[in-house]
Image (cartoon, rainbow, N blue to C red; front, side, top):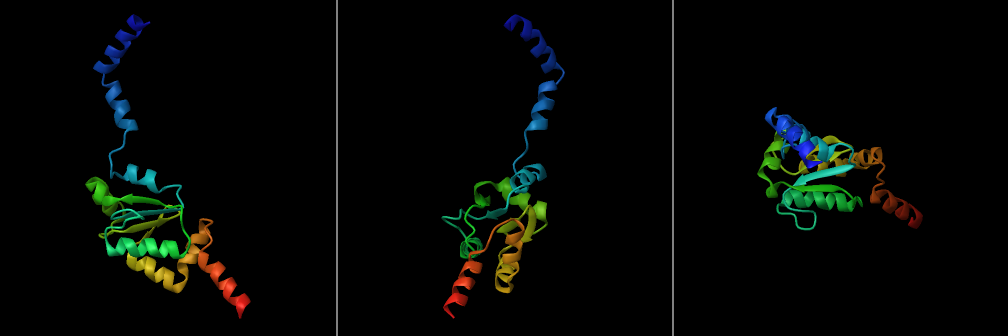
Amino acid sequence: MIRLLKPIFFEAASKNVFRTMVARYSVATGSKEHIDSLVKGKKVVVFMKGTPEAPRCGFSNAVVQILNFHGVENYSAHDVLADENLRKGIKDYTNWPTIPQVFIGGEFVGGCDIMLEMHKNGELIEELKKVDIKSALLDQEKGNKKEG
């Protein structure tokens, strides 16, 4: 069997078939295709400095706290400090110069300042609803109305 396959592999290699296949199916870290794969089909994605358990900047920490406040637990977080290509790539992808960067439902929302504003004006609750996430604030409001 090996004798039969060997000539096929050598011929394919000489025609760069394997290189083409590898290039087609491997995606460079930080490329548009890579970031698409990290963002598309996910409810909430955060590109941040550090991790949700150990943010490494105040702005990333603020975004994590806002999400925690709304009871958003299962979100995808990517540490841009661990990969310079991802750090540069996400900035190019969104044309947004700062980290953290938040996506909801595959759409870029913004950074810390925008998340804070959306939290203050209630818009974040509505955006979370669009991806079937019920903000914990809604449960708190119901509890306050029952007490009053």
